Length: 348
Image (cartoon, rainbow, N blue to C red; front, side, top):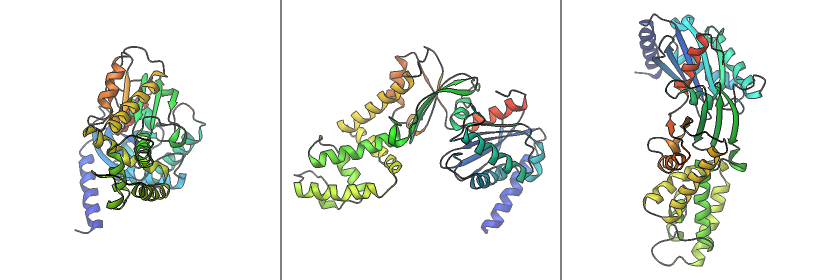
């Protein structure tokens, strides 16, 4: 079956499936730095019906015309044409935007693009809500909480205090150059630093030197092995690693974080120390929000999921503060919950 025919078949199937549901509909959007997801759900109980996906949705880095196209694609996949008149509310959680200020550039861009996308699709825009992807993720926790703390630990790292469904305080999230302490980027960069320090004699022995070198294509004869790692091979190693790293965007250092997790699993003391330090930094980030014992903290991001490498150490540290992590995979469920609240007349 050709791609066009396959898409037509899927579209007909989705249209028939949604058509069997006669009630009002809402749309929730999770628009992040790598992709945009749209979920069509029942307005009465939030039951998910269909989904769509498209390109990046960061409201500060993606130009408004392209952002509009991505929203059209994602929402168009999720909402068949026959059901668009029944959409009663739309809520979008966008990276680079916030619900705290409607005049903030990211919020303006997101609302402009979303309004244009809905108009292009013929979906009513009377009840429209824009917030950050983190505010949407916080609302994804059971009960769609309005107040508490949110922690994101993935490629970047940031913690927010959420009050009345809006961010009122931010700690870190300052990007790879100035912050994101304890993030995947921080861990990956630390792995390369540890490898280079072993190579030049300033740091302890670690298996990270070999795994990082292999990932960057260092010739086998220049990698550390079981025998003596000669000074000449160390120099050749450095001369290969440095240009390879500098040729990529800095944020790409996050791809080395899994090597640290693997090395820690092999009881490499350097790798174990890096993960411990990352957990300490995330704890400090949360502590800076002055949490109250028992206060809810909703976490998201790959480092803190069910299989996340920092879940156990961070959970133990936060337990000492009287806090427990409530993990959510993303902001889709929260965006749907916020759309339903908008439909019910809750403008918060």
